[in-house]
Length: 260
Image (tube, rainbow, N blue to C red; front, side, top):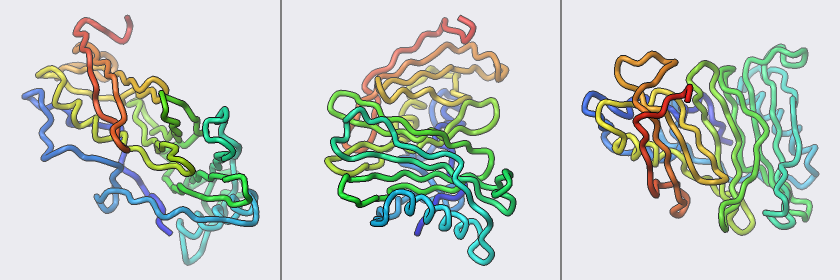
């Protein structure tokens, strides 16, 4: 099955603006991109387990170890698992997650890779695994959350990137009748790069709030230090179009500063 190895960081629009203040890419990059192949990520078909959730979690651990090294699979252990609080938003279905430690010394605490998986229990004994990922240690997955925005039920698996950039590589899904469908949260960021003021750029991660479908980022001028953007801020209102987020409106405040 397909695993995501070393995924490209989705929330790093490093070249949102060059000297002209406009994005210089050939076109918007839509959807998650695999950093190894440079191709869009295509989720593997959901895998169905019929022997219960514990068996599904254990089998995933074995598969993650094999994905790390199919000749001599290392140890794997579950570091955290649980049900995602959906507050009834998905009906009788229940979403579960598991986080994993993978590596030769994983059994005693040292991880060489970190894994994550998402499962949907449809209430009939069928457990569908709809996401599995394996990352190096500079990416940190944490417990997912479910939020609602109008008729939409959204699921986000946070994956933070180590360092001071506040970057992320989150996986985001929309509940569609009886299953989760991936939501493209990347393409709108390329559009944002074309709409910020000339001579500014976004050098750190964008703060996206799925519950309100809003986002905020600081604007940097060329001479700004990493700590201290002086170009102001941009606040974005988003909307969902099919399985993609798009910009509905934005507001730029050239006087805003991180210190208030």
